[in-house]
Length: 177
Image (cartoon, rainbow, N blue to C red; front, top):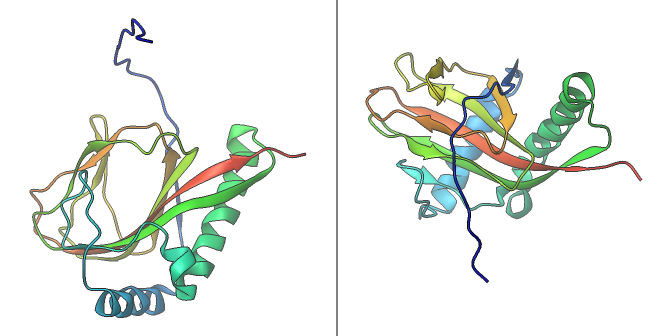
């Protein structure tokens, strides 16, 4: 069956949430770099242009990252209850780590069909690329966590020299019983 589908891009307001988590940055950075040494082959991704990317489910394949996934789920639940009126729980569907050299980024993309996407900046040099949503760009820093609806198109410009290490995740909402 072929559907007659029309496509429009509308400018709408989307919530972009931020928090900071700086307590374990050195340990998490070491875990990412150790994981990268153990699994040096990058996982291909058509949206990203980065030096290295882990597998899609690092939280399932490497126990060092379970606590990060747990933190993301607690953060998502709190912002869901406080700002979105969504009760229930959030479950980490995908989670991956990345290392970027200078002049590497991501083309415009979204993480649909997940509910919420998160980027956690572990180690960011001063002149690292921001993350951009439409015409707005957010300067990134060590410990910054940004969460946004997964359908929100975002990008990372590739014309910045600074290196960065981050973890991203997609979470799905599970309604209360």
